[in-house]
Length: 229
Image (cartoon, rainbow, N blue to C red):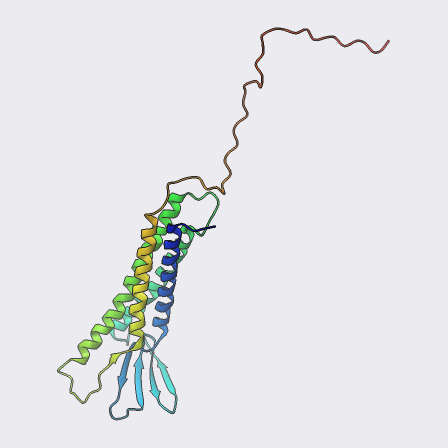
């Protein structure tokens, strides 16, 4: 069955939302939110994420240590944990609702108006997921820049820099935003609320009118003869 322009737009929005959701999950798991290079030992690099801090030593190995307590984390990392996990839930729920409201998903006895509202709700949730992804990533980047250019810190003290996970988080937020906008836009292209061809039409009630009109004359019914003598 050939897809309409609305179906293609919904499919594109679902793909962008799925890609953004996967990138957001990977961003949360990666420890490369911050990176620190030591001038005294250039072969050693420190990286910090939401869950652990690692030391990458060339020619040796990478040793990671998980944070012992949530309360011991800096404020930006505490908030980032909560918002990133909330982003995963919102993104997954938006994908499910948008998938049910898309043209490629057909169910019996579901009106087009209800499917349109499902698609709009799913796109809105994807937009919220984008916001809850971009905010913590941008906040951590802002704190990193602020600490890097802090004149009160001596120059000999190493400074944290951007890690690769921040760039992936920005990309995830953009994909989620584009997917949510495309899903909401596709709902505006919806057709009128027509009954689905998969729904059987109700049977008409039996007619009480006679099949043939009577001429009003009475006909004498012949009596049956007595066959028994």
